[in-house]
Length: 125
Length: 162
Image (tube, rainbow over all chains, first blue to last red; front, side, top):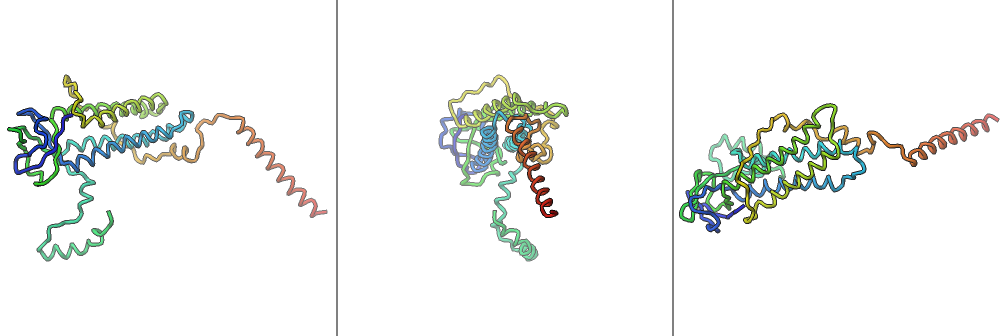
């Protein structure tokens, strides 16, 4: 697939490789970190199933019945990741990593409730 | 995931929903047609995996080695597609676009994947063990050991009685 990197400037995106696309071609734009997160997750699931296969001894066919649900769990995650590519909902893992709110709150009540959950916010992620 | 469609206009891209991105974000841009085709192709293979599993959902049947090999073949295709995502020379077949219509009930994940069967694998109890010569020998030796222990304890108690 043809791909190019770009930087947004208001309504327009400036491309590093504009020659990749034709004039008036419709394109789809992702942020790099979110796409790479999903892409790596897909690759990880595939590698996981391949590892199961590597350590699976073909002589011990009876074990397959136990390993199959494990494989399916990976397939399920892979499917989820694929779906998340074209969904508008925010990625859950991305939200988890962004618990810290950098915008200071001026309201007093908010500050009080914020202090209450401070222990939760300090959890290592 | 945040994404927006856009259109090429004088060597730049006009975004349809620019509010999603901050200035300074690192963006990746794909042609929509190619991306949808790529996505559809992988969905097709994943649906194939679910179809292999559909045999497994009937109570009397379970997965066998043929199904497993088939699933690995399909998985290999997925891996190939995923790796070719950034290959600009890959040419897609645009004559059709796969849209998944598989029933949701086949896609459901059932409970915990660590099943009784997996436990059996971990503690190494074969479902239908083939009786190998070493098993016969071990079984015999267990009986012999037990008997000799019993005899030894009997002899000890007999000596004490004397």
